[in-house]
Image (cartoon, rainbow, N blue to C red; front, side, top):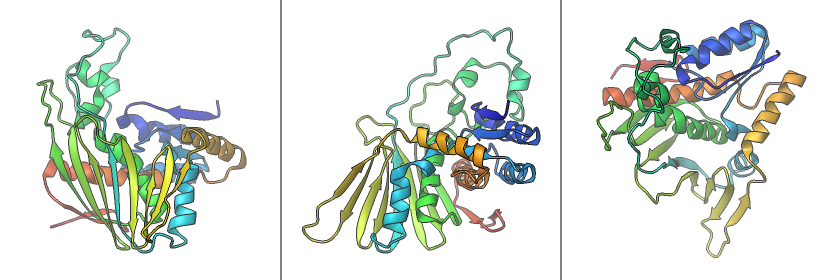
Length: 304
């Protein structure tokens, strides 16, 4: 076997990726790359030292519409000066957690599964619905937001996060122990300067997902399905282009090509780390109920 595909729950991604690369395997690892911020540099180091390909499953970096947004609209200045980027991913009203089984499977090593997660007795809700519990990751933040902030980093060519603030809560409490917010907004300040936002509401009928880059000359909407350019010039007609196919195919093909050519993949371990890092800061802000200031060069949370 030459390649390891890692699709475990979040808290095992980094350790398995490091072990696989130390064993000489190329790696495709689902997002988020890490469970904790400090794991990111370790994964990137393992890829570099072992000369391994590590592609993180943030497939927007291989999507033609996202690449075109960066190269033909942002870099060329067609949008003017961009100081605000908004994003959203709404998934509707949550439901009570209903595990498929109550009894622990006889072949499940629960202690091994928990790994670095603090010990608790067998809990079917946490096993089958781990994203509802912050002990196992960051819920919507690490599951959905990580995708969008990585795409924003790519299109803006800027991942210099200076501050993160998250507000939200568990507004649909089914008394099943969940503590991952179903409703949230995240605001980030970047060098450049620009501000980025993300929102996810627990409400029906909301627009599903998208990223909007707001410039002084035009606005650009990018989703996994299309790109839409709207100039502020009077009488201008919006330019709409549909995505040619599912972008995950492009991302997997890029990974396989890099396994053959040894080129750096579109979303290598460093990019995956920098985007997961912002998600971890957003979780920290949510838990601590404060604005988290950050030094993106030293990768340190600042006091105050």
